[in-house]
Image (tube, rainbow, N blue to C red; front, side, top):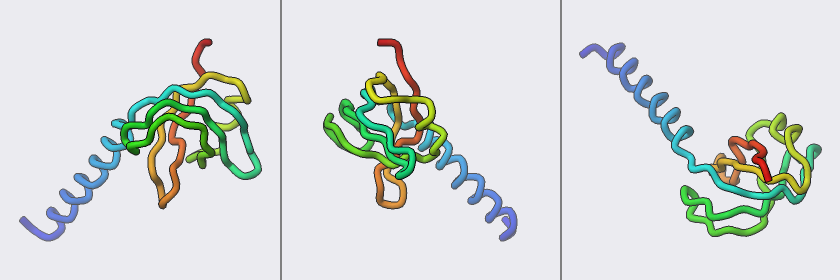
Length: 99
């Protein structure tokens, strides 16, 4: 196998693994306590987050995309995914759910 083919194969594998890891994040139920658009953060009361080995609690999260914050307000019931990005626990997806 040439170096170019090897590099291409390894690159494809890395991107596939990253995509799989993103899709494998477990959804977590929570409730919005506070939205801080200026700080790009959200406070959630949430259930257990298995991929982070975290028990349920209320805490402040960074968001991966500030557009997520425009979708919710304090008191909303939500389902979200979270992961550790650059050392900070970050909300990766967020959607409201019916009460």
